[in-house]
Length: 168
Image (cartoon, rainbow, N blue to C red; front, side, top):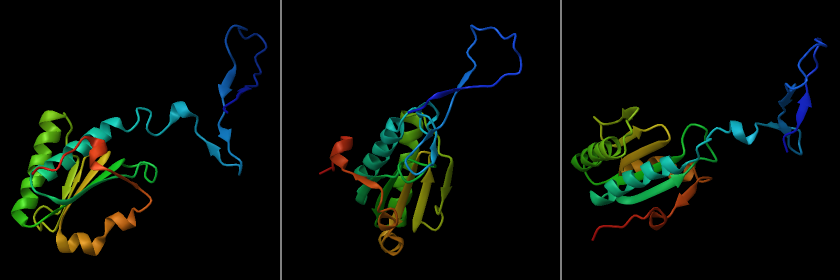
């Protein structure tokens, strides 16, 4: 789809072995130019982010988090690739899940949290890992904000597809 177009030059004495062509942007049916594939937003794909999301979801499951879900939002956002949602039944449980996610993602996977919000209030804790954002809610707050509906264009990733198992 991407064509090369000659670049006009005023210097007639240029070396003919040097290409004077530059890649152009491709244009879709309605005239919107698109960035060539080699300049994509996610040149390395989303596999690393998926691995982080799976690890965070497994920690939530291991700590008796309820309604654990992973949502692929990479087609809707240039900022992040996955959301992980989990509901806790107490402030202590939400803190434990949050702290253990930090441990696993940092120590086991070598990633570092970029930010955290809501830890003190513990109704909605947000852990920002760049490509993955983890939302830990109490039941009332999760129902009120209903982020899964807000991001309904995202794709719910079945936990089984991530190799996750619900502890007995």
